[in-house]
Length: 88
Image 1 (spheres, rainbow, N blue to C red):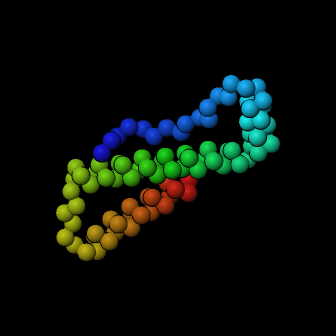
Image 2: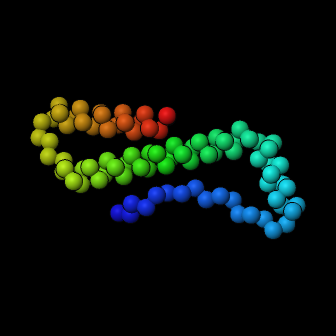
């Protein structure tokens, strides 16, 4: 599995001044929507990073829990971490 960081690609620079003005106008008229997209991308990046870390931890320590209540508690904690990272 690759451990390269995920990067958000910026929109390409338009050679025409008409296109560059229209993209600037879009961002200035819809700054909330653009900011929402950036925020969602950051949340997804954090979630992917958390999942990668969880997979790495599982691979290194193994999943040798024989007691069902302990296994359930571990799964609840992992789900809670994912939920917290997704919403914050």
